Image (cartoon, rainbow over all chains, first blue to last red; front, side):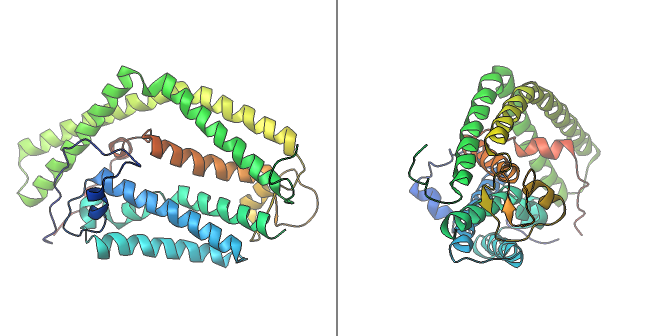
Length: 127
Length: 189
């Protein structure tokens, strides 16, 4: 059996989104921190959204035109998410439902947000 | 109507996004009034949270130790409880679903009357298949990169509403989704 890091269930009151204390921010980059399933899911979700928005603005501003850039965004954001939880946080993905569940967190909302910002910035800035 | 972005060729796109954003807020307000503030919802949600966390703990323990019969029965009992609560939650939400759907439909009709046949944005890619049908809905001309209101509204509906729900803490608990479609336990060797 793989000796993974055991997850301690966080019995504290779940922190409110947007009200992270400084110690909570430090936790975002701490491989020793223990993660509740909901907490990690929320963090991955919001990272996905920020990436979608940022890439949409960037792609739209340059502008990058063509369907290939959509695929590139998918690969880039997925790579960043994977690097974050597997390399930086070093969590055992099996304890959170596997790679599939973690990589899917916030994916569809991120895609629509990316397309929305890409289309809008492209339309407003270049016509 | 004169406003700061009116000199952009595709400022209509911003109008669609702005209206969609207001609609999302209205929908969440309706959901809050009909569902989230009620005691029965809060009770349901807390029972789902407790059951799913308990299930997680029990499964983690059972992976490490040999599975006992009593352990299996307990897991089954918690799983059954989780499924029942999840089903109740789904029925509960179905109540306000109708009102929210009505609001979304009315707003879509409004936007349709305002922007029918108008190109509200330019796509930076060539859509195909179902996406093209949506993005080119109601538009004349042959340019596939023309974007209609319908496609923009669809993108707004999903991205804005999903993130607004997440931000306000109205997203469905993860245990609920896990309970509806229980996945077979991955066997660890």
